Image (cartoon, rainbow, N blue to C red; front, side, top):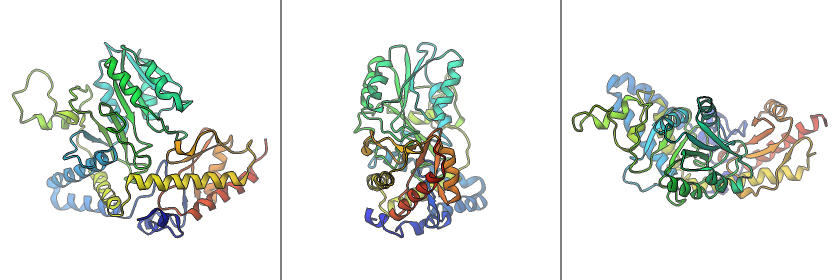
Length: 403
């Protein structure tokens, strides 16, 4: 699969997404919910048939799919040739994994957590609630993103249990550079670092080792750019981790059951097994395993997808700029270089909700947060479709009152 084949109309990938009708609808929700390839439906059906045929013995098949999903996520974190994926544990959503991580911290000795005011709600809301319980939450301003890592590192001290930060900000897609600075500071004072990779995964290549983040925890999932759908999230645990989460499921002692005689303490498995949960619906892993295999078959590497995404973002931005729309109605922040933007284009408008509704009536699907209209392209959309979407925005802008 070449990038050029994805820019043409019709898009070469579109036939693989027939059930989502990506050739008939302008789905610019790629930053939130990308379409699923048809093979995901095959995986979902196989999960049902395995349950019917194998009954309780289905778990051997389910765990095999889970291992394929772990390997898929490990590749996206820069470990394509790893002999195993023992550093990745899976969960249904990032919140449950973040909660287990937080429960493993010694917040009595280190009652301080450092984060930003630009984190997704899974982290933002939970930390807000912890603040009500007396935990000191330090929120560093996400803007300007160019200096965020340095300012975040400055806020980490020897009372800090952990720093929590995204590598791509969810609201405006700005890429956070130089997270190694935060990692180094955390290492010096004995704090942990958790990186939310959700908005980078499979659209902005993110190699933990190459970035100097081998000692960091990382959380993310497949609902967005991975096209895996719900129920597919992970926590990457650094090697040698011996934390003992207070919030712990019975899967966390699987690998400890055959070990030495139990002590008085609750036993844990090694590494990422410590953060495992409990019985779950394996259907999501069947679907995800098929989608990961599809991406490999089609040669849709993270590097190729970044090239395609960057082209699409530039196409959207340039077409929007050429329209020269009144800035009081809708504008683009041109102070941000497009190379510092992740997988969607953020447009600023006080009429974001009205734009979204009017565009949906024209079969252009977008998303908004507060006064930000977000355009999230995906590899199954052609350049012509992107231009048609901007044309629809121009139409809507002409209908929006000037005041």
